[in-house]
Length: 295
Image (cartoon, rainbow, N blue to C red; front, side, top):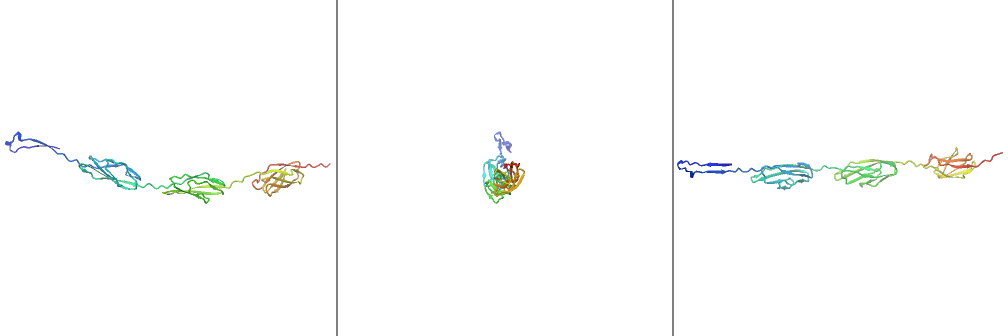
């Protein structure tokens, strides 16, 4: 502010132009102390939480004092981001000052929480879930959540701790429940299962084969030995339309007597047991001797 002072003598008779004067005085009001203020890029979050603090103080501050609640401080107007690595509550305070003094402190609270505990989730694939014994099945881990250990049970009394175990052979027909549990430092997953169904293979049907008749010709009542494979232990021999029952000690030969027949007769064998049960063999020819005419 500017002020003008005027001095007037009380004795007018003594007043002359040389004894009067006008003087100007300038009075400057003091600058007030600044007011602190700031913003935070986040006031809560999961550790590690990086927070940027930005000064919004007024009143022309010339110095700054930050305390971040984690033991660190700064005198920069806009400090680098502060990272809070541990869960907790942190009080961040700013005081600003200039030649007129310091502001009152201003504070914001930063709340940091631990990351959620996440256990892995178990899952796997199987190269087959059904088939005839012996059935070899390969199991492949497809679990998520960064597991570090695996526990497999295969339903046949065997187990494994490998991530991707060797193929498991199921040699006996049955239903097998395969289970996987995975875990890491946060804990264990819920178990996940698959069912493997193993069946008994259907019998392989092998047709009997006649390789030879001995003899291959003869009269009615001739003892004939049929040799070959796949005859089983019991069955029937057809001489043309005549059916003969047989037994075989080794499934490789049959002894029969040539029944009534004439000329060239087809001979076939049909086992009633073994792998060839119900299947007819190839046919071979038994040649009957000619019967002399009686004149």
